[in-house]
Length: 110
Image (cartoon, rainbow, N blue to C red; front, side, top):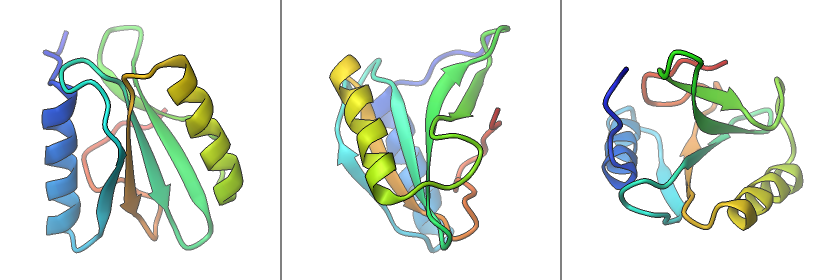
């Protein structure tokens, strides 16, 4: 089982990787710095996709296409994020410029 990185540290790392790749990134909502969950909003040319941080059956970190397999409009993404924040007030929301809808960090998307 992988050690869990504190959410605040992970967010800082992801923003730095995005910056190094020449892509903008912003924290839309700060969550619990130690154990908050993370939602990544990927803003692409065709639309928006939201990834949710999960653990697979073996406990390995992964990302779920929370808004479905394709892109959605901004209103749909905002509604999803709002529902998640309502369920978990400790969640972080980070937005990345991702023209190709690929996150700027290494990710196993399921």
